[in-house]
Image (cartoon, rainbow, N blue to C red; front, side, top):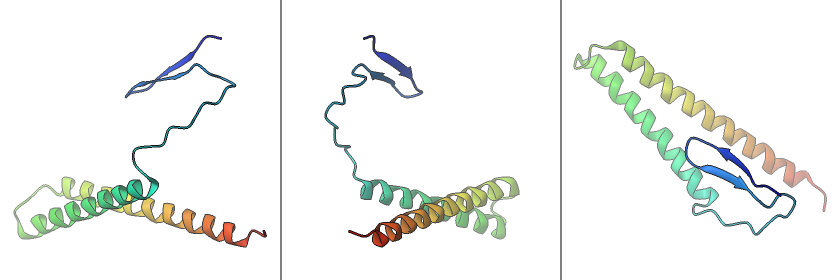
Length: 100
């Protein structure tokens, strides 16, 4: 059987064992670490947005476009984080409703 190779932006993915699942390699970062990193990135975007607004308000920065872009990045990332949180809570509640 010929291996199937898929090229992505970062590295090629190769599936040479179709139909024969192999051992699953544990990821280097746990789900908790990934979640913590994502929340830190959202916090960083919020801080950058606040700094941009302060600079605009004090007259240090006159470009409102970059300020608005920073604010929208922070807003979108925060809303995405809230939606992920909501889905996680829904999944938890669904698991808790299951009968054993």
